[in-house]
Image (cartoon, rainbow, N blue to C red; front, side, top):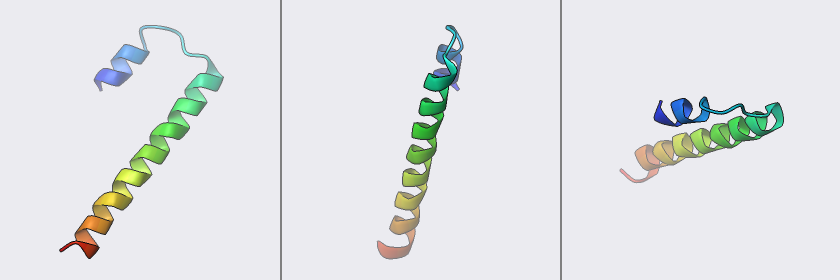
Length: 43
């Protein structure tokens, strides 16, 4: 939430926004995979 508030203080070019959203999606997917692996394999 705070990161989003900080970003909205200035205009973000569409190309930059798209790149950032892609990076966030990758980060979310990795985090999910890490949690899933920990649940399944590391019990």
